Image 1 (tube, rainbow, N blue to C red):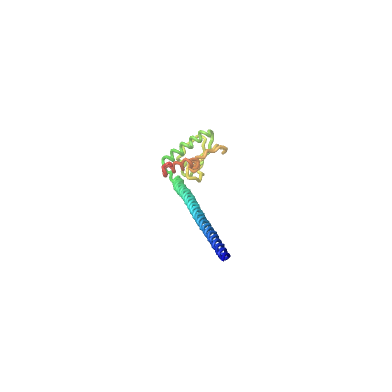
Image 2: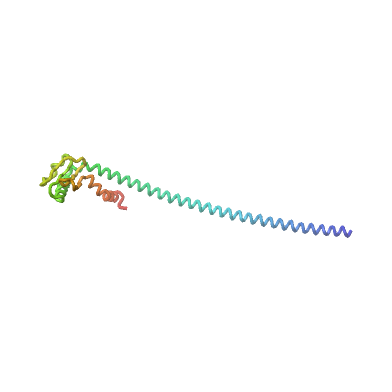
Length: 189
């Protein structure tokens, strides 16, 4: 019986040790599982934070793009409005020849230009404007211009020319005119 008892005692000890090892292993496995769950939970939270951050960045980027796009659209609309007014203004230049201001402008401008050039000059005007130009000593007046109005005054040899056509005067003041139109339409912002 001694061997049986020893055998039983050894088996009991082995079972006890095995039980402790199994419990220790199970405890270790549980702690590993908990650690992995914790890591997974942390990774999930981190991933959610990253997704939120990316979504916020995309949202901000889209908002910035939308603001930029709206500014571009507004700028284009303003440019179209200004261009329409400029075109209407340019179209109305044809009817300006009938105004008293045009008659005064043409007479004064031609006399001043002829005075600047001195001597014999050639004055080119639109057909029908000859009566608006006063007699200038040494000036030859020709109704040969095909413009909206105004005149071209040049020396007799044609080397020096002063362009007083409405188109040229408008072009030289185009930027100033656009600025004034902008201020009238949009309050000078």
